[in-house]
Image 1 (cartoon, rainbow, N blue to C red):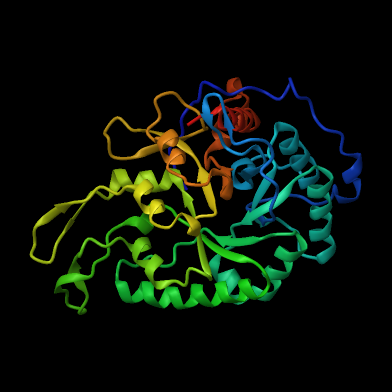
Image 2 (cartoon, rainbow, N blue to C red):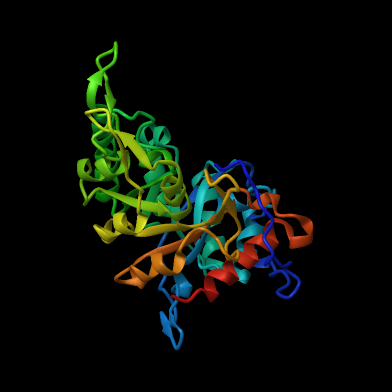
Amino acid sequence: MASETSSVPHSRGLSRRGVLGLSACAAATAISVAGPFTGMAQAAHGGPVHDARGRRLPVGWIGIQLYSIRTDPAPFAEKLPKLAQLGFKEIEFAGYGTVTSDADILAIRKILDDNGLTAVGSHVGFNTLWGDLTRQLDIAEMLGMRYIGTADAPTGSRYAPDWRVAADRYNAVGGAAKARGLKFYQHNHDGEYNFLLDAGPVDANGRPTRSSGQRGLEYFFTLTDPELVWFEMDIYWAYQAQVRFTSYVDEGGATRRDVFDPIRTIGRQQERFPLFHVKDGYLNAEGTSLVMTNFGIPNGYIPFERFFGSLRSIDRHHYIWENDNAGNTPPEEGGVWGGTESSYDNMRALRF
């Protein structure tokens, strides 16, 4: 997760919308959210995707990754109705806190259903999926998911053989998910788009020290079965990779410049990206890194209009807001909930 934070001038409090009554969820009020959450399902996109000013994000497919509001210790029975009132329709979980039993999971499902929400995705640690896959797929089915995902990198290595080993494991998890009617996806950070070390002289351990110019995750696309492994592009982290990984040393020792283009990457295989993380940010003063913010800042680095405008079918993807640092939104800007509300409103207002 990013370590830098920024103030955002668009945040508002919740006063104009108030708070939903929770009587329908009384049986589930004991479910708490301590630490990272998880979950998912599909909703109708709701409403037209065009207007007089151009295309817009489908209202029914705008969601939130619950990691964004982890600093609010309230239970699901309080958080989820608030999110529905703000306008979100889809929920991506990042763990279930202390929830363990089927009854607990079904109580969460009831809260979702009672508030017109669907669980669109989940971030489950890959080792948890690998070691406890049956249970994780059971949970996904109980929550009505169509997707189940991980935010873990396939490997922390830059060596091609390690990516091949990871692909075998991801294909195996994807196969198990498909057998249950689910799609398994990987969510990227910036490191996955670094260049492989796959060429040139070898080091003392026999490993290559230079690069062919191939990027790790793009290599992974070719190794994984497109019917078994899907992807959620985190737009912010993809553009962070654009800023950070701009050159490599080729087999002959020459430095080659190659600026990563997320739009080109998705353009080659848009059907493999059913979900996007919609995050905003600006370039730091040194020009070396992006700083994550709430969505909709003026003069941000990420070209969202061009990015979304490149999609052939705007209503075939899910758009999930996240700000890893939303909990640091200052009180005068509404705190975490003010940042959440403003980000949703700015996503709704976006035209491209």
